[in-house]
Image 1: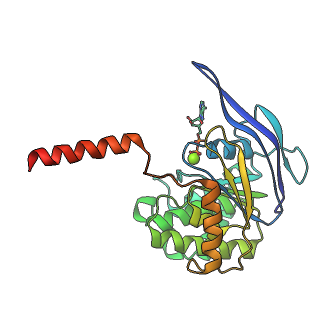
Image 2: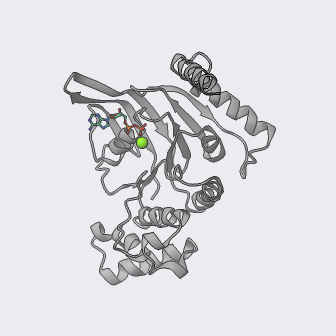
Image 3: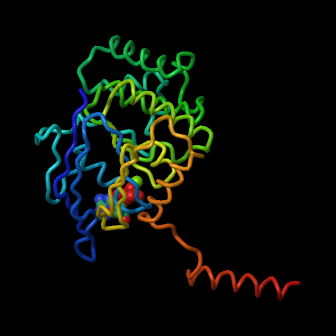
Length: 271
Ligand SMILES: Nc1ncnc2c1ncn2[C@@H]1O[C@H](COP(=O)(O)OP(=O)(O)O)[C@@H](O)[C@H]1O
Ligand SMILES: [Mg+2]
């Protein structure tokens, strides 16, 4: 059953050789039941760390993480589709999805039956017995999503699940994910560093700063779905998000300027 998620004043520090390193600095957030929320932040800003805290793989240094307002065990209740899909290369698509159920004390035959239902619903009925190396990137991604969904988690976390895919496959899977979400009415927390992906998918976008991660702004996206990337509304929200997120400008980057000057001199010398 979908639940809502509340983060209350989350801090996370790691001890390093040079002392304490703060990764997450006071994040509070409410994700309503059945909503699609995206956390947008640049590489290394602490997004995956935050995901590990929500799943219960790690504990925050301080603060609370609540499901439906309660401090209950999260391991096994929060599903994660991670950045590295972690499919077992020696298991078929069917066996990989069934693996998601192994922790749940479900008999083997039942596990395979359930896994088959999911893979067929995902259009992979003809690929049940293929190994990950025999599947395309998009198909592997669907296997990884099925493996998480089959466990019927209360919250689904997706940590940059499409970032390694080409544009066509990625946009196809974004549409697929939205259809799935509309049907299952799950609570999804999606992580990305891409503004366009965030605007296309989300009910609201949580823009976080570079490390230590703090919330810069929460931007609601009220454009009706299905959204067109070419619409003026889309462009307007995208511009608003970019303003908060901050696009890196090449101008004023001293290192780049020096490298270009060097190349120019080098080229002139060799003409
Ligand atoms: N166990 C750890 N000990 C020390 N530093 C860590 C640990 N885990 C992550 N970090 C640091 O936290 C920072 C954020 O990492 P991460 O959460 O993976 O960022 P993102 O997912 O946004 O790219 C990185 O600089 C990383 O080195
Ligand atoms: Mg990450």
